[in-house]
Image 1 (cartoon, helix red, strand yellow):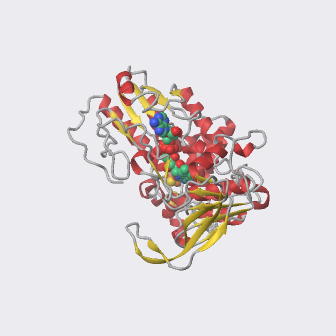
Image 2 (cartoon, rainbow, N blue to C red):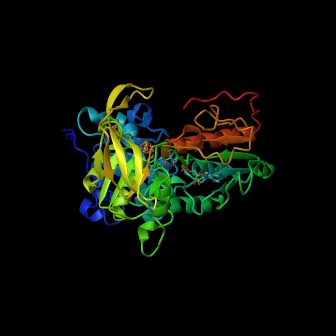
Image 3 (cartoon, rainbow, N blue to C red):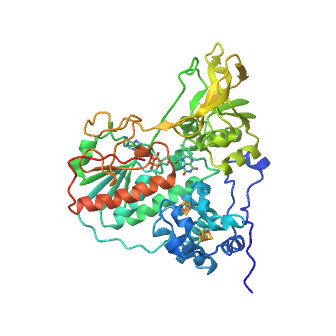
Length: 476
Ligand code: FAD
Ligand code: SF4
Ligand code: SF4
């Protein structure tokens, strides 16, 4: 008799919302062996060539393959299968928007809950880390060629990992004083503990990748200096320049970009007050403008540093929010208040120039815009005020121009993203790029996919593939 299908997924234990808003420890606690085996047992083991879940994964992880190894209690085998295409499973298992990627396509969804693929991936990576298991990798002998990677986010780290394995001498240059990009300065500790990104960096060092911090390429060094010393360059410089709304009062004190707010908390350790006295506006009421993951991270971090009332101000309705469903649920459980169909029109300050209120206007939804989402239209005469002690803008980011503003050879799109072709070649010979620098704000796993394909293209170039006369821009 075949065993009956287990229709419901095995939930991952989480910290209680009442407790977790007072700490920065991870919210999702991870599967135990028992829970992981139970969840793995639900997978139908679709044949690898036809498994729909693999088609949804931007880096083609062999999902039925690694789940089979979990069932066999073979963590090393599971890790090696994942590592064939994904060098950072500790990270993707935590932050990938799985519900729109691998899990969206899982056939179990036709009869019950989809398999919890991300949580199982995290389990494998965490268990391997606990047991001190690294995948066995082949490092080709040094081929005498040097590659520089600019930026240590997921795109740069993935490119570095693949190139060092191919025998290149790889150096990563990073502007900040710590490595990992958004993984370290943006995504908060309670979703992605910093020691995980650090662990991955240490692993790359053990493979021979060199890291140099506090180097802003475009200021400390130019790209021309780097090209003098290296045979090829990969730009993984991300999209770190925040967008603001050009409305009255936007320059008042206490109004932050999400980047600055989260960097002060994550990288400059404002969350360890009073041990670290990083300046950050403290108070009772804070409003976050935006409806994506960055907005959820800012709102939930604000609660944890002591704000009592935290509002998400979003111009459309909940169904249009771009944040992961899990993040919205967690924010709701923690007491973040959501205000839908409202936009800020003005900030009001006190005599010291600190923000004290935001004037909001109600919206109605009109025709769909180019993104397919219905466009919000302000309703005249519906303005009202909300008292606040601080405001955080989380309405998108674009690439920082510092690296290429004095490099006319590097062409950018109207959104400021670097132009690359199918092989991640920029318009400057020997220079490749990927991740948010070419896509605009995207995801960790897409940046990793770019790093992987960029590394392959660099290898082909350094083995003699001619540089094209004209770069045909790739559409993202
Ligand atoms: P980044 O991670 O931005 O790294 C770029 C690095 O380049 C940085 O370290 C920067 O300091 C460095 N750099 C920039 N310019 C220079 C220079 N001139 N010289 C030297 N170094 C330079 N994605 C998800 O998939 N899931 C999530 O849950 C999620 N949550 C997010 C939450 C927040 C708060 C933010 C901001 C983003 C989130 N994202 C999430 C998006 C994701 O983090 C990014 O898409 C991803 O990190 C992009 O990777 P990257 O390597 O291209 O760039
Ligand atoms: Fe799913 Fe992301 Fe892992 Fe791919 S990398 S299997 S999309 S969690
Ligand atoms: Fe397992 Fe779902 Fe993938 Fe099939 S589609 S192999 S059931 S995870």
